[in-house]
Length: 225
Image (cartoon, rainbow, N blue to C red; front, top):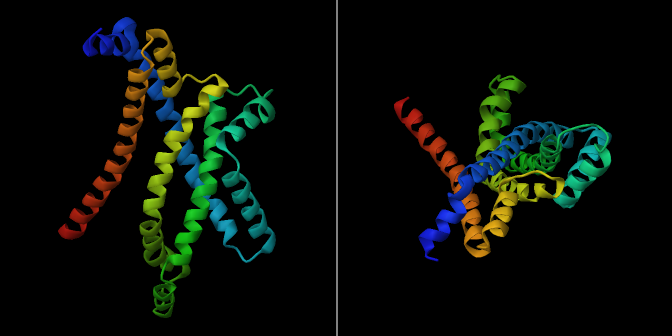
């Protein structure tokens, strides 16, 4: 069998491309919703983590430590077969909750680190000039925090996409599970898995490309101004 014949069998025959796109769409959905929820939740946890109140700080610290230290697959199994076993939630929803919790812990920690790395001297100067606390944070601190946190946040998104490959353990037909099923059906495991890896790699570079595009758009906006 030639390479073209193998590719036809894997990607075209029997509507395989539709099945692969379906699995890819599930992966993208879980990743996007988990990222959005996890980012908002992470910002709130970071807020608690930086409070002067010891109880709030302690709760946030334990939250971050537990979720960052727990394998995401173990958390997924715990929520699916334990916490939400009788709740009637769809597996995809449980997966979104699982990855949102995991992402929130990482986002909270990277935001806290970015806050500590930001130049507080500029904030103090702004307050001296009469800026309100909100304006100081919005105009002085927040741009610094976002710039510092950006590279790690970018890696967090890529890691999230990779972590979703375990959702097949709770009966979700994502990209990884589709690739595995296709490899078994076509008896072409090596080539099928390579194709799956290339798809995940493409998703990662799409993320990098979107961040690079946003940088260029900001540069153009600043230049135009």
